[in-house]
Length: 190
Image 1: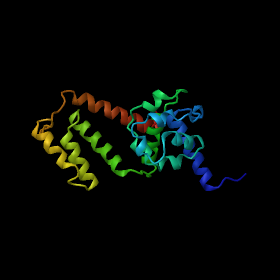
Image 2 (image 1 turned 135 degrees about the vertical axis):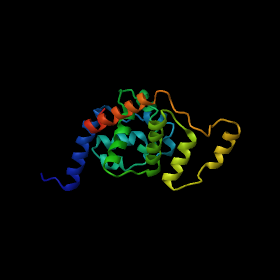
Image 3 (image 1 turned 90 degrees about the vertical axis):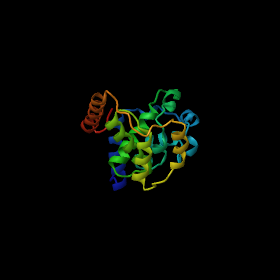
Image 4 (image 1 turned 60 degrees about the horizontal axis):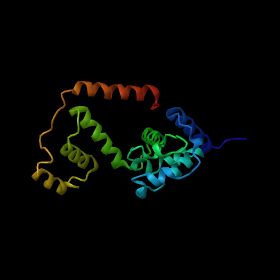
């Protein structure tokens, strides 16, 4: 049997997914507990259990093009609820990594938010909320988005205008560098 180009691509993506995740998705029997417990499931274009089904069928490209993988909060509720012990959260994370690597990010603003988040964490060693808001607004081009929400927080001194730099910044930078090196070395496998 001669495989067409799409089948070859699907097989290559499936093999890459298996290598990077190490998750046995064949254990999933579509009970739906992952979708039922997902705190952001109502906002997903494809429910979590359907993402799992796409992966089972080897349709990794379709799963990577979903906005659901970007809306996933990585709260691990799906994994803890799975009666078969499938690491569903890891499936979602690997799909995000692969989507980014294959340049098919469905939710570019969420990806930009993650990039800003990690940049601040790497520089400060902890989160600096005003910097996160401003950074997100700049990279997404929505300069004044949500700025009105910050005013009450500033007025009640819930947000600090000046960032606080962690005393353990060197350790944190070292951890981030090690994680990035592992990601490069293992092709995202964890």
